[in-house]
Structures are given as C-alpha cells and as structure tokens.
Length: 362
Image (cartoon, rainbow, N blue to C red; front, side):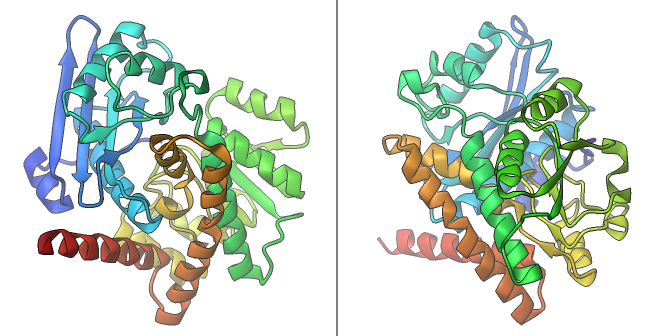
C-alpha cells in the first residue's frame, strides 16, 4: 500500500495536527533513518509502536508518523488508558536492513526522550527487535515474556478487532454471530493471522490477501480451507465483512464506491484516506464502519498492562470491552446521523479535554 506524502513543511503539519514534538534520527554507521512523533501527552507518556517500512520518500514517512501518532492519542483516550499518543517509523526494508546495531542505536534515540515516548512493536518489527531496543532503554514494551514483558501483542490486538467486528455484525444484522459470514482479511501478518484463528473458530468463511507468499502460506498451513485472493482486486470480491489489516488508506475515493460488503472492521491504522470525507462516504453507502483506533486498541491495552505488571488474562478481559464501546459508537452514529469515525473521535477528545481541565485546576 502506497503512503502518499504531503508537501507541507514539518512544523506546519505538526501545528495542523496538534503534535507536541517530532524527532528526526539518523546514524551513518548503522544506516538508521527514523522519525519519532509525539502527538499528545495530556493523559500520560506517549506510547506507540515502531514501524519499519520502505517508504517512497522521507515526506511519506513523516506523513505516516504524524497520522499514526495522532491515532494513538485517540486510541488510548477512548480505551480509558492513562497514556498519550506517539509513534515511530524506521525508513527501510525490514527484511534486509535490520541489524542488532541499528535497533540498539534506535533504542538510544528513544532513551534520549527520557520516558516521554515509550516504543513497542509494529509492522515490520518483532519481539526480538524489542529485546535489542531494551538493551539501550527501559522505555519499551512488547519485550519477550522471558524478560518480564508481554511478548507479542498481536493476539490481543486481533481479539479486540474480533470483538469490534462482532459488535458491528450485531449492528448490521441484529446478531453478532459470525458463522458463515464471508470475511476478507487483507494482510496476513501477525494480527491478521490471529484474527483468522478467531474467525475460523467461530465458523466464518475466511478469505485472505497479502503481497508476501510466506505470510499467506503460514495462514493456509494452519487453515487449509481459507481462500487466498488477489490483493489487487479487493473491491471486486463479494463479502460480508472487509477487514483491512495491513497499511492504511485503503478506504478512499476509488475503493469505497466499489466495496461489496456491509461492514468494514479491521486492524490497520488510518484506514480512511481522508477522515472527514471517507467516513461519510461509507455511512452514505450504508456500510457499518468500526473506527480503526477503537477496535485495534487491544495491542495498546496489552502494552499498558505490561507497564503495570503484565497479566495476559487482564489484557484480554479489558480488550473484550471494545465490544461495548463499539456498540455505543455505532448506536450514537445512527442516532445522530454522523459518521462513526467522528463520533469516536469526539469521545476521545472529550476525555482528553476533561483531563486537561483537571490538570489546569490543580
């Protein structure tokens, strides 16, 4: 998925999107080029994963980190967590550029922020990478369980998405039963793979799409009945539920008019290319949209649990609450005839503003 860049200067973009701080990191010895974005720390330190991706250019990487870090602010707020929003991107091919030295150098940059930003695993990263980063900073979560961490947050992320999907089905069909529903999971990575597990266990008819053959094989080896489809022709496929679980902006001017589904509920961040436009387009088409930053919050919940003394059962239980919050958002969206993305954003901003007022009065 191509991430489009913008021509605005960094400070102008920061001001427009409400960011507190952007840190540009580079190291000639390891080849590290990274950007850390801190969006908002009203509720607590900015926590968000590090993504490693081959961006078209540095402007595209900056655009991505700005959008992702802002999404983390809303994700933490609507989930009731005492965290702010941050994110980081490392520019480069995760399959060829990674090294222990590069990860540890990045960890040193994270440490230089003295806890204002806490990093974790995201696209292109692994728990082993978190282990290397942890050698240089304590401000990292998602480290292996053998080191006292929570390990891979993907199962909890997928469970939250599954809960949001079931709530969306309840809204669209009157029942949250997903058996025999045709679900297309776009992105067969860690989260997508675990989501397929939950869906197949319930009896859903699952299709998957990905650009990497090894990821597809990992899923189909576990679930031989899962159908592999062309990732370039998503909009031509008949389905009940579309679950974007890779990069963002798959919901745009070109794709939304072609979608053949009743529900969009997936794990990808920033699924709407233009939030103020494409949320309404989905609503106008009668498609139930589960806001991404709400239903993919399980990973953040898992990381937050790690900060408090990790307990996987507690993280899963808290992620189960995504079902009820999703129902509230979707019902309010119907009552007010407003896009669900806007309702969820307003709920998150309301909590942030109330906490900011409390801090000002102390």
